[in-house]
Length: 117
Image 1: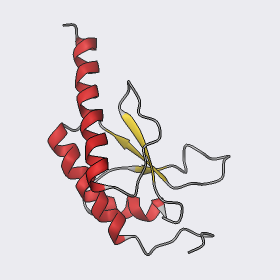
Image 2 (image 1 turned 120 degrees about the vertical axis):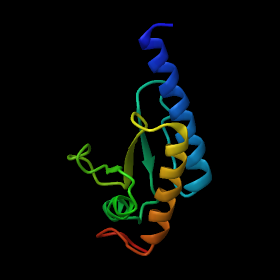
Image 3 (image 1 turned 180 degrees about the vertical axis):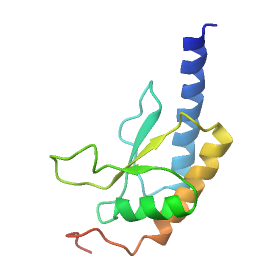
Image 4 (image 1 turned 90 degrees about the horizontal axis):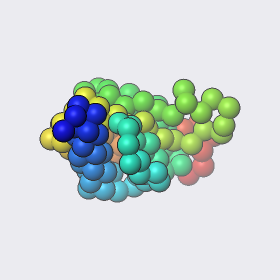
């Protein structure tokens, strides 16, 4: 198997691990597009959540994700997280998503500016 095929296979395993972990640990989140390639997933949060607050709390817990603001500069903001599976194995992805769920629960009361309860 060539390096490209091995890489593609490994990234597929990691994406599947991330999707499974999201289903277990982030039941309030949605992954609308399930890519068949690449190393990033977009995780949609409930509308009232402040994705920047979730990112800050996740960082405090040692999990690195990015909010959607840098990618959607000309569109109305909707809370999303960009999650990479490139540098973590399945076990690390599981733990990272578990901690991300903890970050989401911790910031549950923090509403983004302009949202309604």
